[in-house]
Length: 244
Ligand code: PGA
Image (cartoon, rainbow, N blue to C red; front, side, top):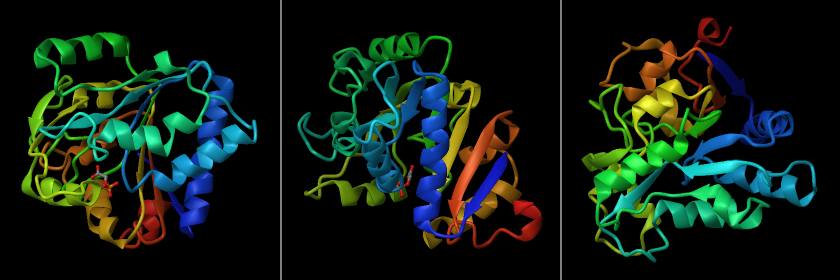
């Protein structure tokens, strides 16, 4: 796992976006899996600016949403695909057929998830992931099997509480659909992004703690091409040896 720690949040955003622009230039048809949410918001805003400034293009890329909340209305603005659209997809030059998202209202969830994995095909070129306070990746909560496919999952209590910020009501989702750990661990390249002091403890446990399913993010230490991008606050419990 390669560690990149930046002095400030703006430097962290610039660092991630600069390498992302490079990847899109060298591989215009990049197959990318993206989360929505708080952590990547500034990164997406910078990528939108980059596209508007014609520094980079998503015209030939394909983007797969990492996960989706179930049990909320299809038009609920808190659904992850709506958030991702607002944050990035609607403001870049990705063609409509280039965006793939999960539908928890599908009448045959198992088939829908199998079709999503089939559309992913031979794996992602790049996955961008946040890290949950319990180490979850997407909605792969602690205990998720390493070979798990895209599937329906039950959310842990802390994840349900954290989702409250995305919803204007109290009826929070208790389950979701998520790309599985199999796709994460076989993606050609994985970037985990974390900012803010609240993530310092899980970042430290991910980098130094035991590797195993009780902290899904720790499994990425076995990935051959995984990078962790941190701002100073998220990396504050790491020492010089970790960052060397
Ligand atoms: P966030 O965390 O909600 O702070 O972006 C990422 C996650 O829980 O996966």
